[in-house]
Length: 168
Figure 1 (cartoon, helix red, strand yellow):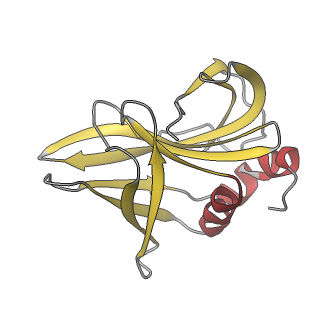
Figure 2: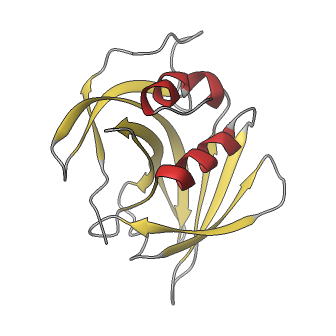
């Protein structure tokens, strides 16, 4: 089943204490709502990233949030069609071995996401890492490459983990 998983900020005020002012690639806490289910008031964090596809660059974000005790992770890029479900991609942390996975596409193919146990496992992999690189594999098109600086994930995700009932 496809779900719309775009996140939007309701309040720009940080929910988590940050050790330094937020830069483009720093984790930032926001209050968020999931548009499809029309809920709001949950804990969410997002980190910016850079996407490259077919010779052009785009910005995007990796977001994680908790609503109704469900942990959700989404990746979205501005002005890029990521694909339809399932979206196959490879990811690599700090130059380590690549892992192949598949996530669900959001309605319209502008983002992809994973929920609950798979999302918690993915977020835990980001702990104590510096960089996440992904390669989204698309049928009959060049892959989309993306890079996210994920330093500080453990600290930034503490409130979300607490809210959703898992240990960071």
